[in-house]
Image 1: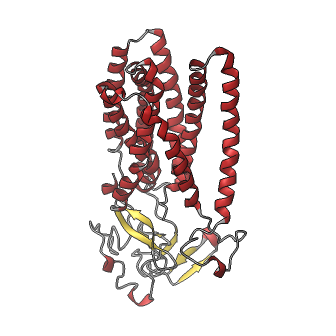
Image 2 (image 1 turned 30 degrees about the vertical axis):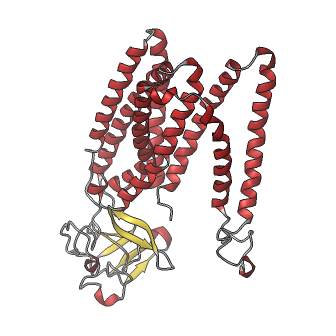
Length: 405
């Protein structure tokens, strides 16, 4: 089961991979140039560029093959399948490509075992890797779960949140990287000075992000989950509180999540649980009327969707994004000095291995486990899980905003 934040994460990873690809191309070009005889440089570069073109072609061919193989091949009899790869219900063996690529990566990693081992005895380098792993853990978690956090905390749609994160953070990050490089060049920063700059800027950015999480809103008022049907706040989710006297005889499904907003400012899990008897209009303009659970003096009605959290909560989101933009600028400003420390603490003949090992460690020990353990923590704050048609648990519908923070 994929979390609801998978789409924002994929979008963010796509942007990060594009930027990483640019630096990889530049680094690869310089590596070939520095480690080949000038006479053969163009030949080696031709091989490298040819491989860069052929690689995606092999990748697409492998993807095509995997897509034509059923996902549960080996555990089910494919002769009994009633669907084909052209059917929209077909799921290809997405996992098969990972096994093949993993095997190839293991083979290509063997030569690295014969490279110099002095890097592991370099205390500055090992400390830098440890710090990078911790920092990248936070970075991955932030970009993976930040859209979901802001969506739940401030009551905005996922598309709006992703757009705002990009608008507020990408320009400061770009400016910070360029400014960091210019400062290093203008003032001829030494390695020791670069280490101080990277350390103190990173610490300041870390503390600044704590202020972001003071920009909070109350939990959405959902009857039976965060509030009672009488509008009183309740701290804990209790399964038997979903039903009340006003809807107990309606035979409403308690697992359905199709929220409506009552004209009393309280949200309900569904129009049925709001006790609504009639409806007018169609689609997103549908209005439910005669709702017995909505306690108002006049006509009790509800519209589709959760109730808006109000102007004050929207302002909190703006403050959060402004602080986040400042933090992103400071983070990117410290990146170039930090990278200079990494390069200068490694012997010239070990630079390639050092940079590669640094990238490998951050991706493996931060990029892979971070979404797993942090996703588990996020799931622990869920107040109500959706249910799939097969009866299994689906995506979380509403979180406890305080614990999520």
